[in-house]
Length: 260
Ligand SMILES: [Mg+2]
Image (cartoon, rainbow, N blue to C red; front, side):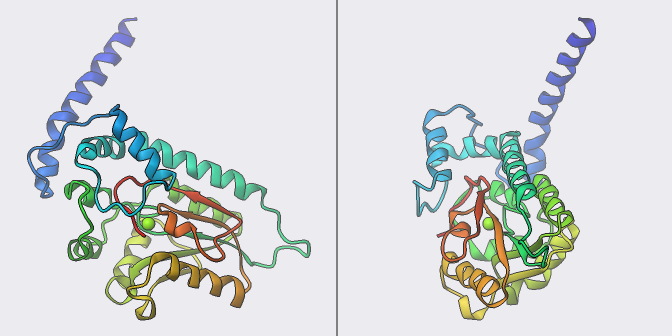
C-alpha cells in the first residue's frame, strides 16, 4: 500500500511539473503565454471531432474557438496516440491477411501512405498556431526545418509493411520544387527509409485538389505500372477517396485541419 501511495504521489508531482514547465517550453517556441484551458470532456467538441472523423463536417478552415483547448488536450495528452496506435494495429492485422496472387509474390502488392500527420507529425506547429487557418508561408517555413517528428505507431506500421514485402509509396500534396529535398531528409531522419518512392505534387497538379492529384498518382501506379494497392493510409478523407483508392483505407485521426 505504501509503495502504491508513493507511486500515486510521484505521478501527481510529475503531472504538476509538466503543467508548470510546459507553458514555458511552448512560449520558447513562439506560443502565447496564455492557452485556453484544456477541456477533455466538452460535449460540443467531442461531437465536433466525431463529425470530423466521420467526414460529416467538411470544408472547415479552423478548429472552432470553443474547441482549441479540447484539441490541444486530445493531441498532446495521450488520446491521439492511443487512437493512431489502434489504426496502425488494425492496418497491420489486415496486412497480415493479404494473400499474395495465385502465381506467387510478383512484387506488385503495394501500400500508399500519406506524409503529413500520417508519417510525420505537424502537431508542434499547429499547436503553436492554436490550430488556426492554413498559412502556406508559415507552414513552408516549418516544413523546411526538417524537424517534424515521426509518428511512432506509423513508423512501426511502415516497418511492418516493409518486412512483409509490400512496396510502400509515400504520396504527399507537398510541393516538390520547394519542399522536395527537405521532406526526403525529414523522412529519413524520422526512420522512414526503404520506401519505394516519395511522390510529391509537381507543377502539373499545382492548384488542383488533393483528391484529383492523389487519384492521378494512384491511377498511374495501378493502371500503368501494375501495382495492386492493398491498403491506403491517410489523415484526410481526401487521401482516401477518388480513383484506385485501395482495397482498404485507414483513416488516421486529425482534428487539427481539413484538406479538401
Ligand atoms: Mg496528411
